[in-house]
Length: 193
Image (tube, rainbow, N blue to C red; front, side, top):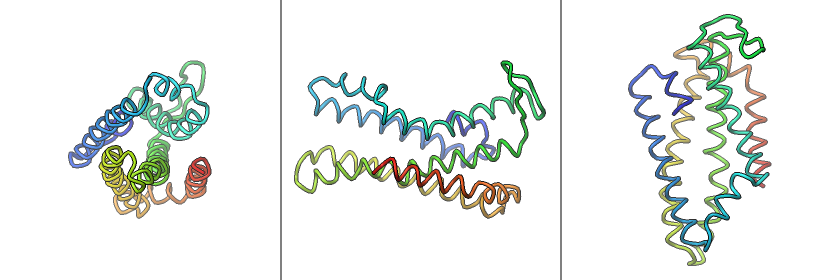
């Protein structure tokens, strides 16, 4: 919600993003519970999460879009539109660039919700089919339900943006970003093989 809330102007969407954030907190605690119940030394797993190169690469590909949006939003709110010098670099801030960062970030979230999470869910469901680790599968089933809601929510936002119904410029941005969005999904699928 750090990335999206500063850009939201309607209470319905604000509530949706806050609820989404709350769900993610529950998911994080659920994953922690699962790991603590299946590994003798959970610190080994938790420590590996932040040092594992494959995990870091996947996270970087997603988090880069968040980082770009957060940075552009901060510049927009603090400096306003225009060309500015920030830490020795020239930064051009305008509403169109901010809208583009928002669109790309939501597309990145969509790939995360649509592809990346479901690959991990498949393993848990496969164990459950073999009547192994069924408790974990029940927890993951609830998480998968929530992620399906998040996926649907981001798809609705992206479809509204692509249609240009609320903002014709968003339709132009969606068209302009089409190849980058396609590449984003292809990369997510390749990384999950």
